[in-house]
Amino acid sequence: MRNVFAFMVGTALLGAPLPVFAQEASPPKAVETAARTPAERLDRLFARLKRERNEKAAQRIAGQITQEWNSSGSSSIDLLMQWSQKAMDEQKFDVALDFLDQVVILKPAYAEGWNRRATVHFMMQSLGKSMSDIDQTLQLEPRHFGALAGLAQIMKNTGRRELALDAYQRVLSIYPMMRSAQNEVSTLSEELAGESI
Image (cartoon, rainbow, N blue to C red):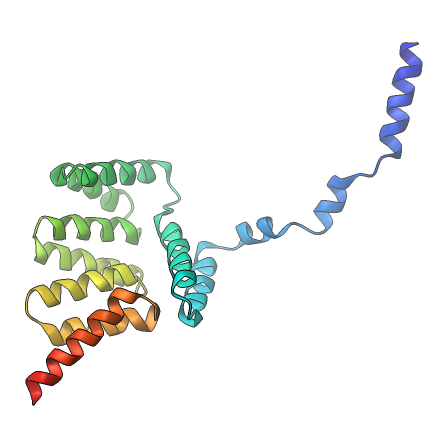
């Protein structure tokens, strides 16, 4: 009886379609997306961000870009970044800096490590150090709209409104639907125009 059962199961399996082979012939879209390099994914996302005219849709694309930036490719770096974020959330800025110093030493080509450290320096009112880290971020990723917005904020806070306006305009050339940058460009343009009258 066992042999009959085994024979029937074997026959049923032989007659069944083999979906595994069919899937290999045409991979699903998720596999195609994952196969692209991070640089290619970012290029596509930035192209979409620049064209998008719906604010909410643009925010979603910007979120996807941020996810790409946050992906370091190293579990150790990712863990240090998580710890730094936790320390920032708890306002333990010195602790966050310790973690971020390790990030930029271990992976100096990781732009988001520099950007996060720039943010911590900004929160600590160490504007010179923040600007230095922003510069490093922008050398690695010139399209980093977050770093540019940070630079613009520092320029505005230190009374350099023309430079702030220029930085916000650079943000909008990358991320046209960023509402905060639009508002800042409008306000700074009006202020500077009022001064020239």
